[in-house]
Length: 414
Image 1 (cartoon, rainbow, N blue to C red):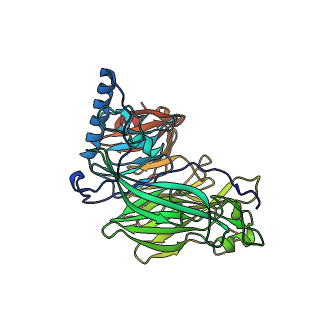
Image 2: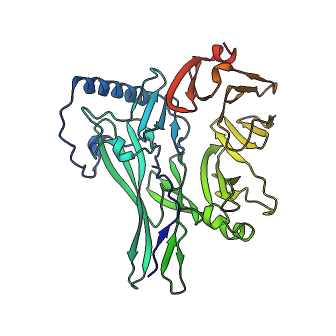
Image 3: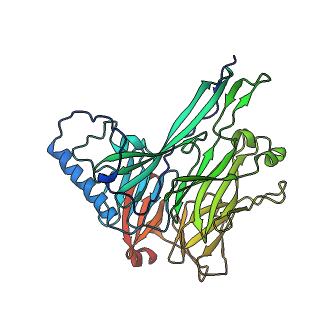
């Protein structure tokens, strides 16, 4: 049999879910935890743990956003920012205190044992509902022998819930046949339903039906949903027309990817990306799934003339679609689209919108007047959230550095 060669490796991401009315810890039938390492904790560790507990408690007492949505590296709620640090650990930034600590409130935890939530996540970013975190842990692809003696690619993912009040993990659901965490780039819950991308990978077989090659890009990717009240799984079909697209761009079968962007106006947006050739970079176009009619929209009408763009910012209030030199901003409750044109704008821009202001690094655009100005305080920084009367700022090149600046001070550029 030929060697089975995996294609490029993609960082494994955890999926996390927003659940309403989750059962308390005492009512859960938790999976058996791995015994913790026996260690001696110093007073400094205890003090650090107290800080971590404080950050978690502040978050738990706050309101959640409409959707609990995690992207590749972060998840921002109304009260906190969860992110993967440069050293690959999951951390929480509490907006009230601006404390930046590991996401763990297990007493006297040294963050080295297998039952520590930080190690379970392995750098992935979960989502939250009250005291609970939710995430998928993906089975790495395994080659197994079928009943016919031929090898096949086995995929699967498990959904877990972890209660922060008692540090207990519960196995909720196993999904067979797809990879949820690997190469799905985003996961979301909306109105009690979890939406996630099931990746079937791209296995290749020889003339005898023997598996010879597989990769986690360029394969079938479908939209799935789990109703949290019934744990029923629904499948809504493929997220892009792989076979038609491949007729025009054959390399899509080596590079096709789908990023979940978020929900705006009851539409779930996606960025579909592929490389035209092995040497070229990625191009993207935007599609969406209507949550009311359960129908897809946005697939190119003319595959020889695709409208390349990306949904770069999606929140309950705003949707931003970017093209080269242009950003189209949609606001909830406003029919008219605002278009901002500037040479600094391009697809996959690190931008955000709060209070009718588009922030793009040190540039700020007023959506009402379309005037722009330079804010020196935002040079090499990004606005990640609005909390009370202040903006939470992230240093773009230093993922663990944040600051909170009063809105009046920031907008005046002082």
